[in-house]
Image (cartoon, rainbow, N blue to C red; front, side, top):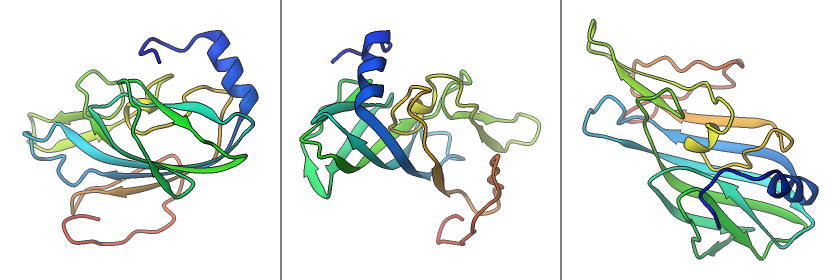
Length: 175
């Protein structure tokens, strides 16, 4: 596998083999205000069909802790940019547990401490090829699917999106 950008041939091959049906992304951002914390827990579950027994997911982060394919834990094959998937069936559910890294460049999940109020703020724009800096995904525009996000945030934070909040739960140490 390569850590370089995707080639046109790679995207065409993957687009012909994969149809993505849904993403569920869980982000634990409760430690974001701690300046010593550089990363966050990210868990992605992707439902997709594939005509190939292997493909890859895109992810740029410090580590991938585990990968589960159709309920079976598999050996993590991560090169720093791609997570190799093998042994795929026609219908697949893949879960990736990983650690993302906060950025200071506006790419991925940007963390900023406002000097005026001392508060920590996070934002993302998911510019092309930047969603993979926050969660494992098929990072190409012709492989789209609906997303469900679960965000654990510090108590008192406001989490906003371009969609209405489906539900809000208070949990110990965050919301």
